[in-house]
Image (cartoon, rainbow, N blue to C red; front, side, top):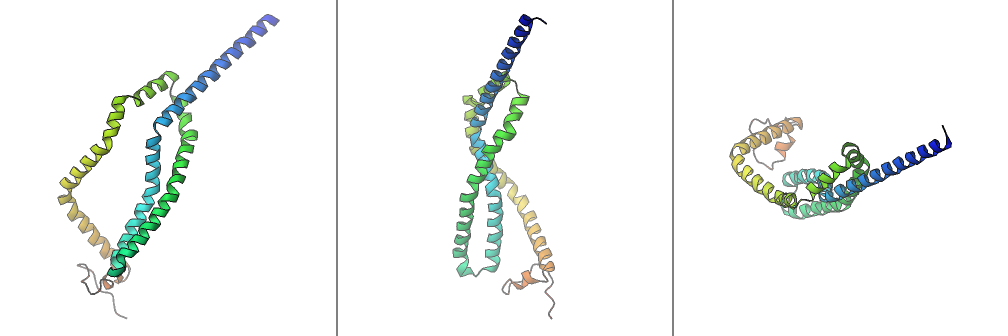
Length: 201
């Protein structure tokens, strides 16, 4: 191969490499734009992740407060529990949000770059930035709340008896498993139907 051909090949290779790097950089910028447009959704996801254990804590604490805390101390105890849950959320939510932002770069960005062409990314951005889509997304909370309210109202008469039956059965199971401690803790109230009193020693 002559010097001219070698030099020409090198120039072509460098040009192709530069074009490839430029296209790669362009795709990265487009992906960053997509991720930025979805920041609200990422924040919502992070908040839901942080709130899920908080809801479980609150539900468990509420049950114990109702069953085991004297009535005159319930309100103050509930406020203390709420304060602890709020403290947890204030600390945990920013951590989860930062994790979601970090991992969206390392986990999601490469998938966008791998599976979408530059033209497809541009089309996707156009769709995400569409005023009609934004209007639709803005309506989603209202639509969801309205539908949820109507579903709850419509289904409640059929669901409530099933929930009550499940609660009663679970209480029986727990009462039997604890040797009747739940029924003993009712302050003289009758134990659920079918629950045997604890055997006296």
